Length: 421
Image (cartoon, rainbow, N blue to C red):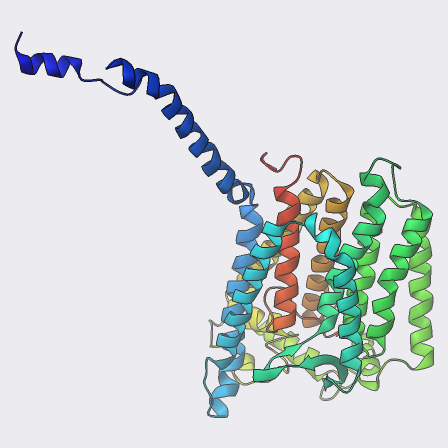
């Protein structure tokens, strides 16, 4: 036989499949090494694979649409003043990037590891609320609810308080349930969790920021419903809320402009050129958009700056005028996807702590979306709440993406996080 043929025949086909004895002995170790490497690669990629991509895509799509609407809403203002037409857009995109970074950090760290940070977050939120009421705070639109920061930035501590309430109530209500001591939260746990949540509401009403107080109240109800607490607590809180609202009205805690908002809601034709002007102009903008809208940057109401605060509280009027019914339907559908995924995450969580966190986030986002859209079309009173993901504002953007990070954390670590839900 030719020497070249012999060499080709003796050449191993692959490690472990023929060849010299030395290579055959090494092949099991090599295969094990390759399996270990593959296992480590899969483990590293596991968080990415477990991510709820539908939730993330819907939230990101809302933020992208919001960026375009903010650009359209603010471009005429900066053009008239001779400033950069993209100034608000650039700042909004910076806020979005920071929000996405916070989202990644929260999702990776995980809600369970954050248990030890819950007291710190709660204390920080309370201190922030008091700081806003102190000389460090600034009054914007009649509310002393902001802390001014360098470079033109501002912080609204009430947004952090929403997260603190969700995490604090989740920790207190789930502590004994998750350890197997009891099947549902006891009266003592419910009592102290409610006291914890009502504390920031009391401080916020001193600002007064009725919108944020309403959101936290809805969060409390959503959390208690998800925790399995006795229904008498729900009924008691509803009664307490009604009594508190009556007391706030009678004692004159609300500012005059907030009273005027309720008056305009009760009678839209009361003063359309005064207290009812914002809603009247917003409804006109939404109604004029028709089916497909007038096109981005083409809305008469929006580009004429007829709707006050159209980049924040009344951003939905920009969508209605320039994107039309179809565009508004897309936005509401994306919100529906976010809420649906949040509900599924709460249902699939493998501990009560995760269930309560997810339920609190869903209650928060659902109510705030409904209130903002409702006040833009005149079916809800104006409460000064931004549209989540969409409105301009750093504090809101940061808090919302932290909330989405918490949802993703619960999903990634849930008992059925790897299944299709």
